[in-house]
Image 1 (cartoon, rainbow, N blue to C red):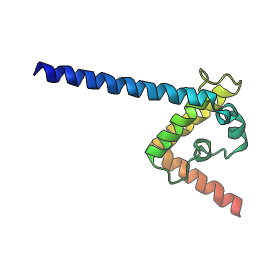
Image 2 (image 1 turned 90 degrees about the vertical axis):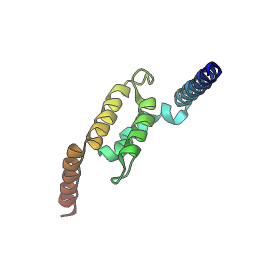
Image 3 (image 1 turned 90 degrees about the horizontal axis):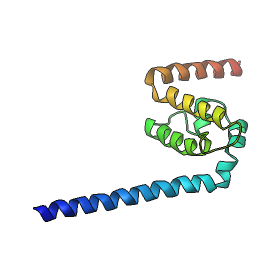
Image 4 (image 1 turned 180 degrees about the vertical axis):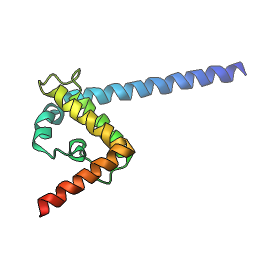
Length: 122
């Protein structure tokens, strides 16, 4: 019985260390990635809707939105990106995530996008 507990603790610790190692490698790749270094330029040039900021479709699930936010937050977080616009971009990304994950806010936002598209077409 005691052996089983020790084995469980050892297995758990090994999995925890492997998980921490993967997280550290992911953060390191994001810091060294050329596309992440140029990320502010990509955000300025792209779609300014919340969907465009996160790089997801208008039919994106909450899981896809969270994944996109995590990916972008690694590139734009002011503690990780020393670009002068990083804080501003991170706040836009955070706002987009907050709106799209809240059902009430997302519904209102979708309606406002629909109205904008109707005005552009006429």
